[in-house]
Length: 88
Image (cartoon, rainbow, N blue to C red; front, side, top):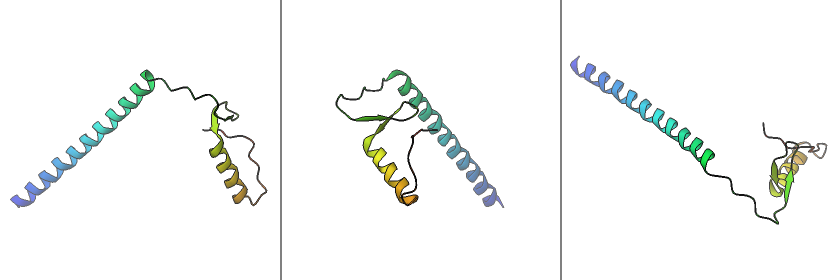
């Protein structure tokens, strides 16, 4: 019976340790992401690149736009049309 109590005690300590470490990873990761987004500016796009703007005004790369149009065409068998691209 003493071995069972020792085993269950080790199990509980291990599970609590894993949860604490995972919680720290999530908290530190979120902190790093927020600090990076706040203090490191986004690089301006190089001039000469072709950019399309969707309905929301955000840039959509031409290759991604072509892939989306091709996927819609394949799925709808030529009956669909892409009017705008918005991220929700």
